Image (cartoon, rainbow, N blue to C red):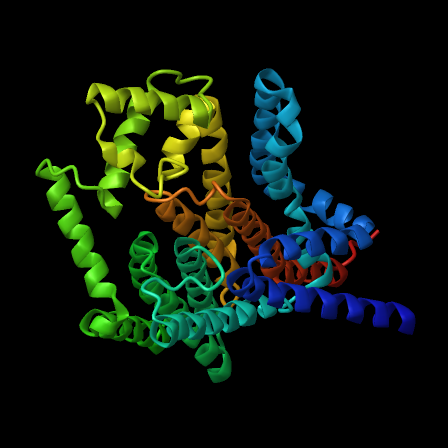
Length: 433
């Protein structure tokens, strides 16, 4: 008995460490996402029997999300086999590793029962604080206009925004001053890191999430978070050293010049011209899509014909169309677009249902999952977050981690209901013969 208890304690300790380190390593290390993904898989292999039991127990609730990621893998395999069999291995790496991220969900369910997944909140807040410190040092210590740590500034800013959202969700369930203080600090730090990175695509979801938090949170906590966020945003706007006001002003000027017919290549004019090209390309092969080399060649022809502006090939030439949905539609056709949308919509549906059924004090994981999916949808309007393995894998791991935590959050209430039914059955009077 003591041996089993010690083994269980070691499992919880290792799982807690891994869950805590995942957000931190993802933001401040170039190889952090891939390393944590491998560790989740290895940890789950050591607990394969228990993980399989958990998968069967929650199969009905989780199977739509699993099928979504499996369908993405199957379509990529079919496409590679039909067009370029020699590139099958490289084509399958990203969707396969995204599907294997289910190991994170199973590990949380097996080794992080009850409130053990609170280490995810701590990890997100600490990572956001570290990211803000790193961004501040690069901005004012090194003099970088757009800090990004060891990542691309857009990826860094969007990851920081996700951690801010997780910290906001942690505020909903915070029942002590230290936890609430850490969560609020993480939320503000994640926002600050995102603002300093200049990644404008994530700023919309931060404002909307803050308003939602004020509505969901009860009492003074939501009002405090909302007021703190407004104060942070105002400070970043008023202080020119942050670069926030300049980034927003540049964006407005870029759109104005583009609509006025100015063909100068700017951050937003390039995106607008690429989106125009994407819509034109999507009409050519709506079902099977085309390779990057094929659509780039077509874009060159349209530039020569004057149907597209030179901005689409401005240096440094964009490797994609700067929009997730358009990128998938152009390269994978309508079936690929439907499969990709399923990896957003089905997790969104799962988290919405979990949030509606979650008891008070345990709504954080479902709310965090909901905000994460909405954040990636927001990022995808002006960036292709699923272009890189790092961006794709971070999404899949975080979705499955939060799914496991959401299911665990409801477990105490289910156990209480079973206990109540058992007590009622025992107390029920035995009918007379």
